[in-house]
Length: 134
Image (tube, rainbow, N blue to C red; front, side):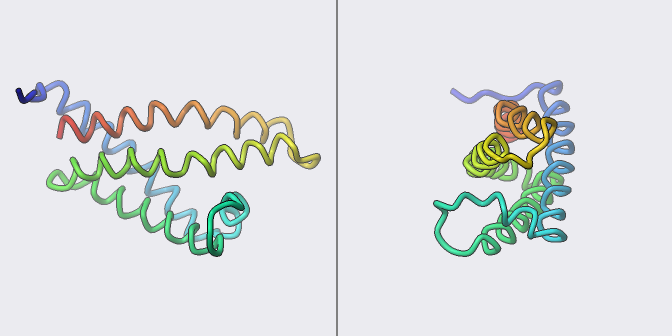
């Protein structure tokens, strides 16, 4: 049995796709413009050089942002965005742990890295909603 999205769901999916595209596009461009910042948060357990993962994830974010903006590729863009948000979660955990254990990290930095973790849940659910309603 197939579920057809309502006009309201399609409208919300278009809005969510634009928001997610802005988040991913902006983040992806930052990865490419300032890779050293992101190299530092690649978990040490990930094989290969950190720069490879930084550039690769930046390109993936920009590509997914473009897919979310085009109606024809929006469904796959939503699914790819959800997968990316899940895939980068270990890096966010690593960043939070490093901030918590660093003597140099400010209270604000520690708070930001911790608050980011539960924010992954609505990002994933919105991306899946874009996938389903597009």
